[in-house]
Length: 189
Image (cartoon, rainbow, N blue to C red):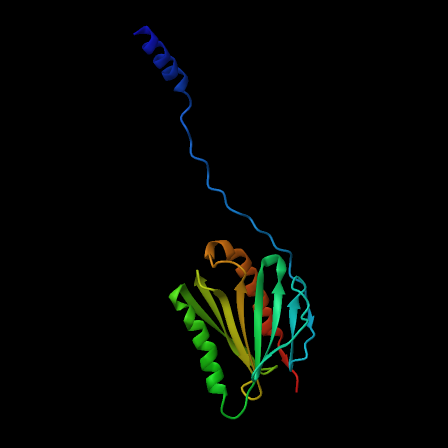
């Protein structure tokens, strides 16, 4: 009996100690460099300012009547895809509808979609910026047009499974770049 009681009591005495305390929650702190902008040189009929953190634009993709360029951010594992289409007499309504429908396809996964109208009468740039909250594939989409000759749409995508909490800091950083692209668009005549 002593052989059973003594080891049991010694384990009981050694097992007592300080009460365990939960560790405080830790949050990932991501810091990005202050954005520095320069004019993006493209063969398309518009110019804009790009963040120097992005890669220089090296090629234009052509698909039917549209042309596209990619503004790549390798360090953020993201790309802003820009698609340009010429406006003619009867296609502005369909271009606007297509851009809006592309955003609405994200409502399945989105928690919210907010829209912000953009007007720059001096440079004839009018558009809309959509900010998409939740685990949607794209966190930001936009379009701009002069309503006569030019139509440009853009979408932000990450090279990762969409997890809103994880990509939120990078998404917020790149939303500023998207706003800068919209603000700095100048159409070439």
